[in-house]
Image (cartoon, rainbow, N blue to C red):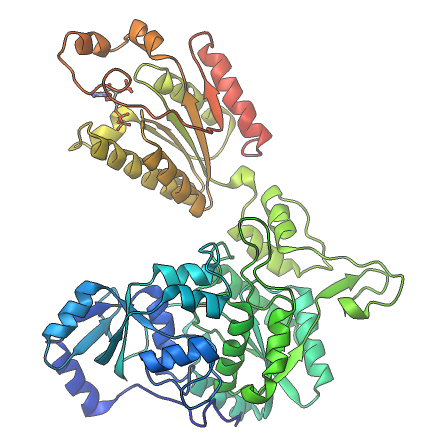
Length: 571
Ligand code: PPS
């Protein structure tokens, strides 16, 4: 518990007492800067000493030194730029004030810190991305962070008023000081830290226990990231439930769990050094580095950004500088013949191994397949199944698009009845009329208004899907922009999006003219009508395309139902 922090002393930027009171009073006159989620993660670890010896966001000299040589200007190893990005407007605002103070606040208005700006600079983001992430491909999550950042970075004296507020898992969100205190109370002198951003299964438990067995003086800190991880990762609420459960499988007194509010950059080799430094600040003097540590996965072409053991080699290379003992680990695999786990390079000859990849696990969860007992614990399976129900229980959206009079509403209504007759999920029908009455009554039919209308529909549908329901939407939706927006919003929330283009030609729609609208258009009473004198962008790759000219309602419904069955949405 008395491991020396990086650079010698544990930073604490929180001011207290009268000083805090005074700062809060003064800050009322300071311009505000709204902290993003990433800023809040970074500032939490700056304020509480997790990023020691850093005392603020990096100034230009420090930033350049870190980007170029992985060292602070005083020569100390530091691999990751920690910067505060702002736009031109904010820079103008700062320059107008005489004392250059900014009040850094979260979205609820809580004053997190005051920054007295003394350096404003424009980073070269290509260089930063190339040097720190080894790539300028925005498909890399860390590169994408860099390019999404605003154009200026600022630095100056940072005074903390309070740590960012969290309402969840408070007892597990220990600061470096609190973790160190816990170690002292436990009588722990040597601690191995284990970093993860995934649920933990038997392999992780075996790996960490093995690390402790190989270093008998050591105890274990399970230190998962709950700040920001790789997009698409399992949400941290689900993961924390898994961690809490798996802690019960460790030998008594061997391991503790604490949560780390880190914003990961997925920067592999550079990131692993940063992770080790952070753990040193939390009082750990050993750090487990496995295969593909903090790896961003593959690029669009399927090429790896980093080699599987690149981060591990990097950590070993800088072990002296880090002052943390690196415990390199191979991937753990299960050997059924021995009913036990081995590092992949130590499997006894001739024996078969078994493993379940993250992708395979997600597939098993989605299809409701059985997850074997050797792989994980039944409680963990239960938690994961709750967060990722099989497809027959997941929400989805049926999104019809097509001309007025193409048959969208008729098919949508018939489908609604068929699904109600056979299923148990709740269904919301968002037909054009309902939407234009209750969601979009003030909107007209300009491109802007139509897109806005469809985005509202997409938003409501995504909320319905989130809650496990079925949304059936039947607007004209003439533009790709808002159709694609709806698709990605719904997909992001874990729902399926089934786009059904009702491709009935305009001549047929006009001939049917159920509402007499086409006649009005021809009589010059209605302008900007989709398909006549207003555009309709034909969907390029809808899940289904149905022309109702010669297809009956019943056949259309059956075609959709059989698609849903084939995709596993219904039985
Ligand atoms: S959009 O483009 O998706 O926002 O349109 P939507 O909300 O589906 O509304 C289409 C219905 O509004 C009636 N209507 C018009 N449609 C197209 N163009 C113009 N200019 C227009 N003016 C009124 C029409 O009855 C559409 O209903 P449906 O059910 O499609 O026939």
